[in-house]
Image (cartoon, rainbow, N blue to C red; front, side, top):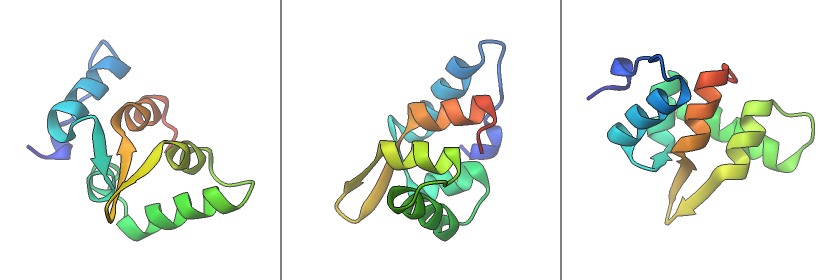
Length: 91
């Protein structure tokens, strides 16, 4: 399945969250997030890194920085936070 198949349903955030979990699981890799947002991996990584170091960063980057975790070399993000940001138009 591709991220392009994600559709907003009448149930709002729950529908987006359920579809993301079905595709990626409870945690999304940086590459998965880049695919869903149609952004470059490096630009997301840079924005999140900046949000961890400096004040005044984008709200979406701050929220992703707070839910970021590392598993080995992989950077992972909570799917629930990504779904919430998509629902509210935070990106």
